[in-house]
Amino acid sequence: MDKVLGASFIEQLNQGNKLDGKLAWKSTSWTAAINALQVKLNVKVDKHNIQARLKTWEKHYDILHPLLISCNSGSPITWDYTAGRIMVHDENVWNERLKVCSCLLTLHLTRDQNTLLMNSHFAFLMAQF
View 1 (cartoon, one colour):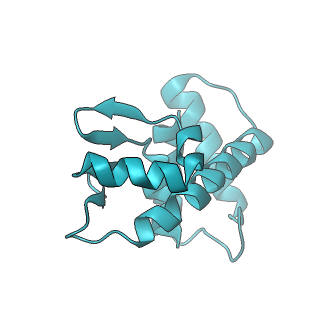
View 2: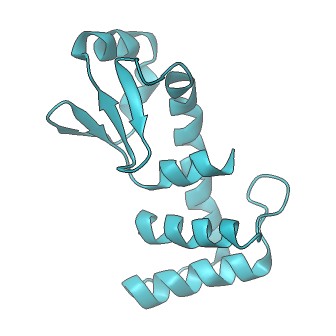
């Protein structure tokens, strides 16, 4: 669901349908997101359901942004924009970050070798700021 929702809003963003302010989108954007979920996943939602999900994405962004702001190409933790995931190149550094910011554990991250996966919605959030 997040992938379809993220793709829909990225398309709306690219079409210039994002307004100033948080969760500020033209009405056509909300309709497009609702329709995308209905057509692709047969999921019936309304604007309020989508707004609630976007607020959750924002909470995830607020947790991850400080971590990722310190990342660069030489960092032991980087963001892979293509894959939409956090790349952990040094487990010790990641474990130290978890000690400092245990809030990272509240995200539903799954292990894939040395990679921590995130849903595509984080890439969407990064594109907005």
